[in-house]
Length: 338
Image 1 (tube, one colour):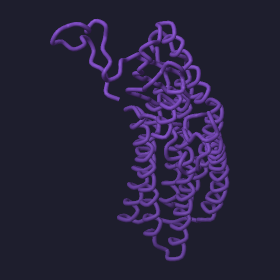
Image 2 (cartoon, rainbow, N blue to C red; image 1 turned 180 degrees about the vertical axis):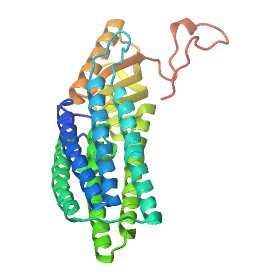
Image 3 (cartoon, rainbow, N blue to C red; image 1 turned 30 degrees about the vertical axis):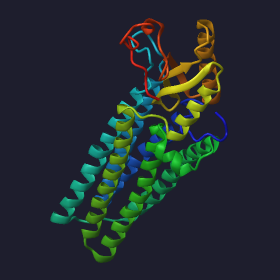
Image 4 (cartoon, one colour; image 1 turned 45 degrees about the vertical axis):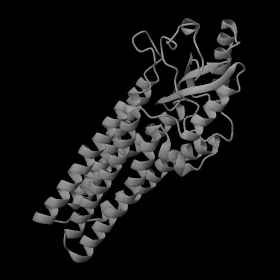
């Protein structure tokens, strides 16, 4: 892809995403155990909510690893367009796991604490666990942000824009979940401090509810992103315009009447177009023009894996089958309005 392109779909494969997810999974697994122990010892509902948060994140990362592995399988007879979209099914399930495993438990436990109160123990271990967890989550987030910045720089776009529109939802999930984890740790620390200073578990319960609501937001954003990609999302308008311009540079092609693009995965794009060729072009020239268009598109946009061009007469063109018939227009398929 050219340096001026702003497409969010180019990368070097699943290696970077897999590494990012593995780092996050290992960090969250250890943090979940530590938080659970600290929550039981201190009697803090916010710590238990954070433990549920980390468990949900660990399950999420396992689902994302499954998504990366299964979506990378090559096309076969039963799946001629490959398995790319399968990653969004598993990623959608990951967002559901975040909601059910983390948000629901955190909100429930917080409300239970607000209604029934809680017996607080020694918060020291909780503070220690929160500090260690903050360092581990920061490292995991740094890994994810490093990949986001690298991809954004490669595409010549801002990191924030890349994160919003990228179809690599595995990296997006890690960055959002780790960011939410850091905010959740601060909320849990605030709840513990409030409970310690006042002797009331209200602050701890409020912190637990806020952690749950934070997870609801993360689950909603990730679920919506994956749902849009499952339904079918086209390339950004700027890249669609660039694809159209590239096709028009091919000899014998005079117009792109209709252009359809579909993101099947972070590095799998399908392009289909109805193309008008010069009337004087021979069948051989049309065939070679189609091959040349596909080669040029793949060279400029490495993420484009499949190109289908349909030779279609433009407006005003007449087919030989319809010429010379009184009172009749061209037969067969209607020309497509570009």
